Image (cartoon, rainbow, N blue to C red):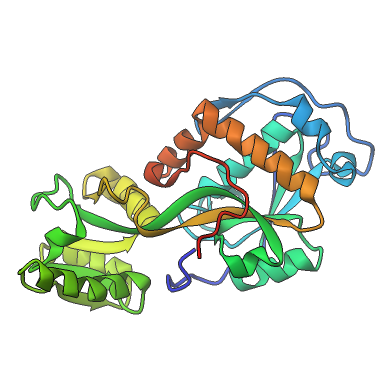
Length: 317
């Protein structure tokens, strides 16, 4: 997750998400879990088929309780959101991914809201088994939790619908007015790219920095800038939802489909649950091979950041 993208405080709430092999009492009635049912379920328009072998490979404590306790920092669209204002029901890319994994594994993924900076310490303390919250997999975090990576995202470029300026790469922004949110990695990226513009013999990018990305979007709508540069998942979600998809579109540079300076996002899992990590990795690979992961990402305007291999601890130096 881009640590310089400002986030609203998380609201304290909990939600239980039941997979297709969920227990007969999804909220945990205290009794022994019923045997897994074999019926597939549909999530984000895709059918998820349970895997009994994966269920059998889970840690005994998880099989006995029938649940995985999952932390998430909400809201952070398009990864995690509430269905509507005032609702405690969660939705989003990460939530649907959790539901799909739960269906594969035959357990319940119980999501609970947790402020982002407290997620990893809470896993270490045993409050949660895992976290799905667009967390960047890096070497520092890998020292205390394990990651199963499911996406790789970086900076994206959003333009007016139809891309009237035919922008394809960052080089096409040289000599043009571009909006960005103040203090973000995206601003630093564009400032660094000024040297590239000079090497190409072009004019510098005319940066217009705004305190909020919503202001940058207004500048793009009014034609004051030719592009708004922000995280690629946020760009995809905005393009998909603003004016019903009629206002903006996202540029896909063939050399950086996940975005510029893309880094892996992973499911964080407690170090003392290696069987859970292995089972989640195998379940995720099934979702990739079936095309389900790509479809879930596409539902939230983030198809380009879905990965093709479920890697463990795939942080880059």
